[in-house]
Image (cartoon, rainbow, N blue to C red; front, side, top):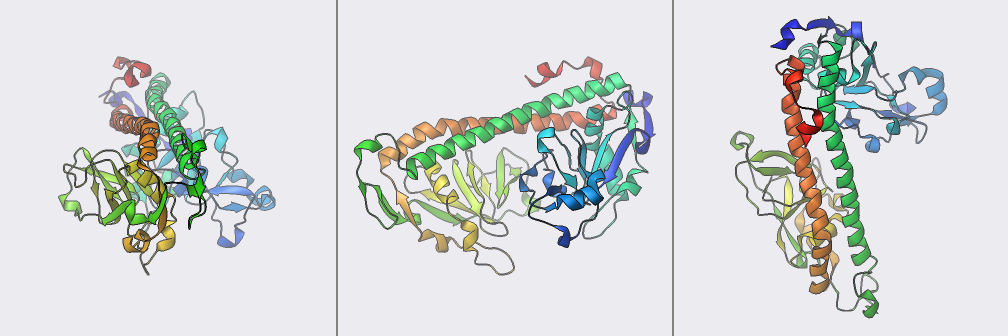
Length: 401
């Protein structure tokens, strides 16, 4: 193993790090300097500022907290709750500052420690095991600068560090490019739906008269019906954790795919939403799957189009139908009676022909990203430990082709 020749050094000797300040609720403002926390670091390693709503006034930021501003290419790590999530902050994400649940890192000397290698190490078991070993807190684990000062990291030659970083960043770049394409495809499909079924500008609409209905003017031949005349919801299935075994079929919870299983309960394509715990998210599942008991899944696509059912369900404020007290709960009977549009079958068939390939390409890109992440995550510990000789690996382009 090549790591035998690598020295281990104390993290403070080669890396700058800083924890965010402890801000209080009374400091939050509607505008000003945005403040991030651990929730902005996604489990898949992406930095996501879209759910950042907290800010402090620019006056307070300039007078007290300017030195906590994040710089471009800083590496941010969650230090509270789900420990060890790490992401790279890019220039387009800024300006932002940290809260106390985030620590930022960057190399002190890039001729000694490559920032890309530092990012790889911060995503490795070597870092996470040290963080977990020192973390404090029972209900919620935390680590901070006092713990980081006791950590060490492997330090191969700078040429090897850069090679390791290059290999891993090739995967990250492909995943990011695919993610952008997925977002574009999602927007394209959504706009087709809105153009056809909200603005009623579907193929041939010029020759169709508009008639009055309880939902306003709608194309002649389209009917206002109950939701259960378009789709029928059904409660998901129990699957105890001890009975789950890895396989080709995704297990769908109220928030999305959580794991895989060797069996499926529902043939794809499918549409799933949250029944208990988390409400409002609607998911389109192209292949066979297992919906958990925290979900409602579409048992019957009455109009024949899973895509149309997906967008109809997505257009409803399902979170507003919470019937639970302690735990948010969605009762299918509460939404089954809602009035929705049932277009003619020829328009629905044409919609599937037009939007279907877009959704199919999106799904293929999602599968590519899943495979890329799996390969990257298998490589990362072998590269950081020195188990793999990077000089023997092909160029990153060949690796990810």
